[in-house]
Length: 240
Image (cartoon, rainbow, N blue to C red; front, side):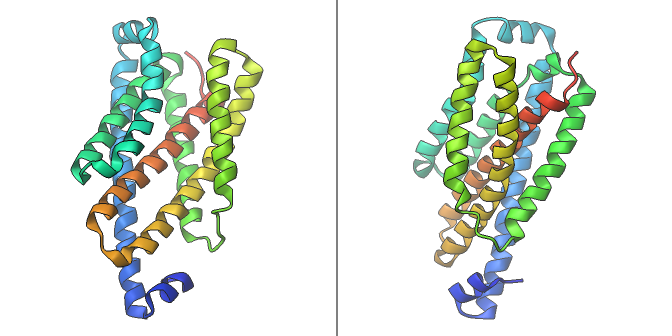
């Protein structure tokens, strides 16, 4: 059902209905791209993480630093290059990024039991679905959360890098707790943001923008899911 903002923006019930139909298709594309990215990440992580020789070659050598920081570097590169890429190239870049992310988190299969990884993935999926649904249907404006959440995100990135060298269990625990809360909030915030951006731009029927917007939206929600999963794994994961 079209909400007041949509109806007000497009004037007629027919126009609002058309936007609602387009919005559903747009969100389905976002979740579809995200799901493919998750499959690529899981497949690469499992293939590498269950191969002792590859784990030794990657995570027991200086190469681990390249693998660990590659996703962080690539996400900034992707954001900077998005406007210059075609929709097809942007989608390919996203899939490459998801594969690299799988490589960077492959160690979890060598550290945690398969059962605890599966359980944590299920818990994350349920939490993500509920939070994303809330962000989509709520009439509450979540935009005020954005600055606070981004500041928190920068804080945990810096703290995580520092803790690589400190190896403090107390700091690690604090980072995990705060990380779960931040990415839970970002899931709802990003879903509402993706929805609102579509409604604001749909009237222009810019297919190139809509295609790239869906890919960027998929990337945002993908990162929310992956990071929430990784932080929850530190609580729910049973070590080998």
